[in-house]
Length: 119
Image 1: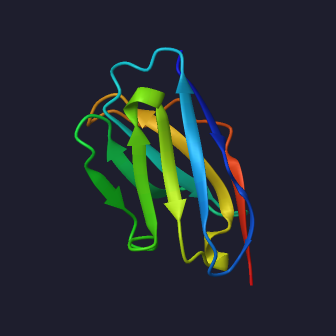
Image 2 (image 1 turned 90 degrees about the horizontal axis):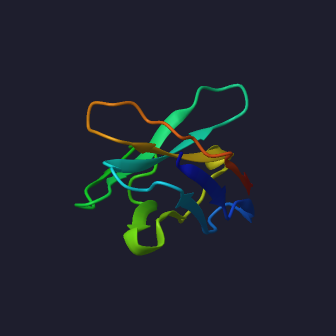
């Protein structure tokens, strides 16, 4: 029922910044957490960051800690990922997803938005 749509991707030079967004529509109740994941060509999808919807507790992959910031605007049903000091290794399709409880898997994956970092 919940639809997730990512946007904000693009081409940036190394060291630059970009903010991607994810808008949730439909039934947005009963969301425990939302997260960002990414997938580079030929590689498995990997965890980037998560945030609990009510408390705002965050977790980050070591590779992005200190550079990326995940946030959410509950009133707008929108998830954000502010990416600073981008590196070519950050190039990937970025996806958002939601988790309905702590012990349930992420679901309702969006279509993804491409982020390309040039050197």
